[in-house]
Amino acid sequence: MSNINLKLLHTFLLAAEHESFRKAAQEANRSPSAVSMQVRGLEEQIGVQLFRRTPQKVLLTPEGRILFEQAKRALQEVQSGLDLLTEAAQSRSRHIQMACVPTLATGWLPNILATFKIRHPNTQVQLMELPTGPMLELLRRRDVEFGVGPQIPGMEDFEFEPILEDPLYACVPPVFDEGQSSVCFADLVDKPTIMLSKSTAVRGLIDDTLETLGIHLDVPFEVQQATTAMALAASGLGIAIVPRVALVQAGVQQFRMVPISNHVGLRQVGLITARGPILRPNTERLITLIRTSLAQLR
Image (cartoon, rainbow, N blue to C red; front, side):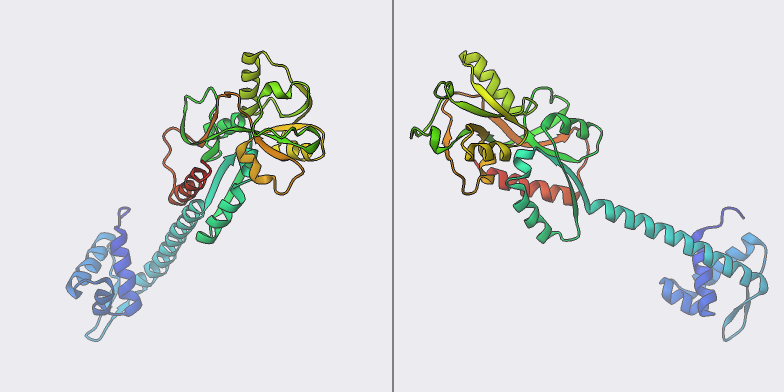
């Protein structure tokens, strides 16, 4: 009796609600004889008669009424539980957690997310703005599904898909502008230079290059965000060195954007994921949009 088949209970409920094996059979897409056999099997299994059969219809016995009320309530609770699970799964599929380095997050990403929101209005995107190092820790803990940023040492445990190379530019205000079409680090030795923080991947590339060249720059300002570096340059406080992707944030500024000609190891920017996890469809769609948009910056 403890192993009653749920299908038998479902057939029993249909017959009780319709007071007819024939109507129950129509709804269940079965033959009336099959429904009758299932009900009979249930009666034999629990040892009580559930229906009083007449030529016109079938009526519940007192014992059948008890089972009907209990079984209906139980199956409703099961269905409610299944509905909650489905809703939770759908909610998770609509929630995307991603990370992005600030240089990219404040520049090109807003337009990408605006496009994605138009295409998928019910999807919520949680964005963490972090340097690549802390981003990797979130990926390792599965707190985010993917990240967007430059390749750095120590990424052996992650998948990195390079999309573009990101050269360096100098933001040169008029007070320091000598009209060159490009500058090298040697040209900046006697000028105040605004640098990004040593915690950023781009600063690591710059410092490695300066050490190789034997050049020391005067750095009166060191900032966390490329937007801050460009704002300081616009105020005439120095020449800011930023990656090209940051220049989308520049707008109309009081400086000229000049490429740096030194052979700096160009940083690779791309998509970062932990090895192994299967990304959900909406996450894949956002990644595809990011991939195509970044590729246009080449």
